[in-house]
Length: 384
Image (cartoon, rainbow, N blue to C red):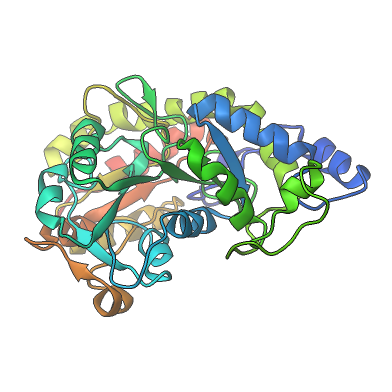
């Protein structure tokens, strides 16, 4: 059944490369389905090739990869970590769990990424790290952000949940920070239902990261014959995914270029097909600055206001197209108010775009007829 045979075009649909079932069967036949099996190693190798990371550790989620980064930074209560307010709550929660204070910075009005022009004003003598999120897979302004972090001695972490396959001035996203977190949730370009990875670009962190991921033990060293028994040597948790999940992920990563090509085709069709409609109706399409290559993770539209955003979503639903809004500001969320603080100047852009943004269906299996149906439904809406 093709997408266009469905009554409703879903917002997202899992891509199947064709090798998933064979790899899952292999994982089950190998006699052990716990983590760090052959598929875990293969998926990590493929990820290293895409991102250029010095070391890749698969995790049970991007959230857990971020939590590992917080442990590796040795954060203490009262330390501050600058994060965008326009992001998923895991970006802030991972550091709040260590007692650090998330400092919420506003986003740029064009890319919706953390506004690098506001970053330095948010730095205090308690700031320990800056976490950037490459929204929609479009790179943050990494040259400026890296320079600020280096000048103030701050660790840079990339929440690269959207950015796998994207680049900034020819350099892969995920390769700029001391660490980067990846997501393989079912909504991502490549996925295994639930999963993630911690990319390590600082070799000094690799040994401890392996221990943290293995419940605080040196189990990895034991299996490599480097110690005669493994013991509890540090804090940690169970962050290692099953090799069964890694088998599904391996199949997806091996078909990465096909997935990316199909998603980019959908993205371009939206961008070109909706240009005139957007201009007439005062709707903004995604902005991609020069030097940024994005992985077509999502396609969004910014409607003029909340009322139009809600009416637009209902309009599409009535025509069999499932659309969705996105992040709500973290700085004004109950936990954000309680656990964090707002950077100087507040987050007015975040508050505005959170009310206006709509995401259209975008997945590798969305065929030309399905794309045309989405575009037709969008073109039938007139801003009020």
